Image 1 (tube, helix red, strand yellow):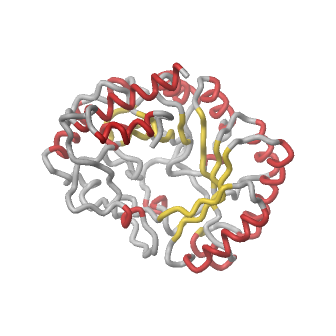
Image 2 (spheres, helix red, strand yellow):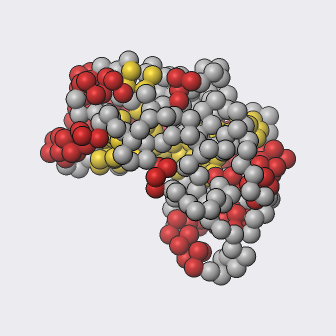
Image 3 (cartoon, rainbow, N blue to C red):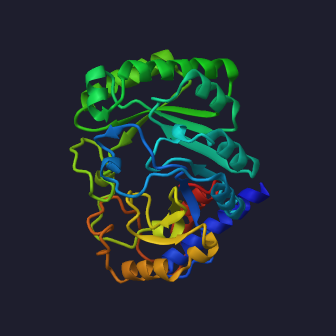
Length: 332
């Protein structure tokens, strides 16, 4: 309980700086994701991995431990994926269990191609809190068109085996089967939902909006994050005041959608997150956005930004009341 209050207070300090338009943030960033590797075995149409040029590598446990030890008091949930398949990391279970031992709940998203019986049991016996099983199609044709390099029958078999093991072992609190809705599979959504609802009624189903990754992926979709975030006026993006993502080489990226690490604000191997969070690099980006400048090559055409108008009365306003629901668990 006390720890949750500390996490909530940290988020409050970040939001206070955002609404008051201060480039200095007294709180620590909520680490949205730690990219334990940026290696993937698929080339999915809706993912920018196919365009990535940065070096492929696996994060060391030493680096991971340093991050966890720095954020354990201010972050209570992290994802262990970003632009890579986490099941390819040989120390995945060790990473999960270490973060969990420090009071941090761990989630990950997998393409399920490497979800063998051995790995399924290892994950189910670990301290993993949440897993997203990405299928993205209700037919072989659609799935293999969207998930280049994937085998529909193999993935379906892997998911079935995992869920059956889960029913027996009773581990992992939250399990979701996910489909990213795009033009190519929108007519299969009902079929997808019916299949999984009937077969595994206790498993969650996620219909995820298509993400353009800052306008970089040009796929047509009937449901997009961009459509749900249209604003008449653009405000500074909350990401710069509230969250961050750490890449496999230790670089701290400005945004989770920066798949190639073009704008880096520091590296956790060389500095602490606390110092990086108020480095000259990120304070400069915050000031640009406060001034209405979004021309850094990453934010220019991004439709997925999230923000609000400034509020000098915060926390003595309705905005704070809305935020308190988010502060409760330290997540948005």
